[in-house]
Image (cartoon, rainbow, N blue to C red; front, side):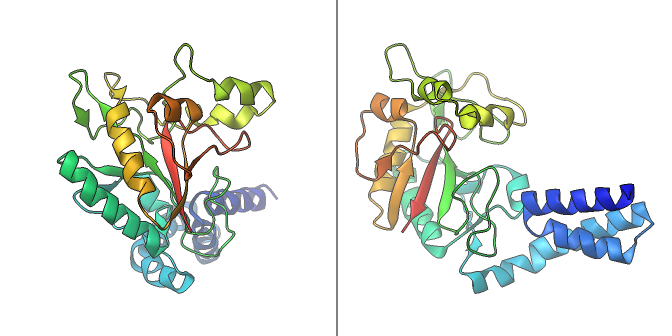
Length: 261
């Protein structure tokens, strides 16, 4: 009974985190039911083969493709790709290509860092902990930061790209406190998902992030952009596409959420 429980637990966890991991683990368990080392070795080999040589060619059947990286478009963390969390509809890749081409003209060598996107298969299959990343149309991208000399750089303040917040300053509207007072405890949950904080010398670049947001609003295929209200006001940017995401989600002063029509 204990072995069965552990196997079921692994299947559930791997499915939640990677979508395909649960099925791959089940196959490895069938092949090596009582040989733990061989089972995990088989799982790793099968999983990597599926992730790199099977999933990218099957995903287009479901209307999705991997985020197309380049010199100016990067997946921020290797785990995102290993966990198959970097799939989008082709329109998102078109947006990234257009925006990065314009952004680099103003800020040479500056990259767009992509965080969580969507899983490769099945509309409606959620990408925990995100509420809406389930149709290929959503993507989180990092804010832009500057070093102690005020130069915009590609470094980010956390390993995962999440969880290091640009908090409201004195006098700014504090939506975070409003949501937490209403009982939405999960609102700042990403603070537990940093996987480690790095580059403490970095500061939020209002100028760079505002430019990025302006370029995103110019893309006709984008329908919504989410960012925390105090950052929107601080950057003095207003557009019908820039909206508030609501207290049921998580705070967006560590990343920008975009979605296409």
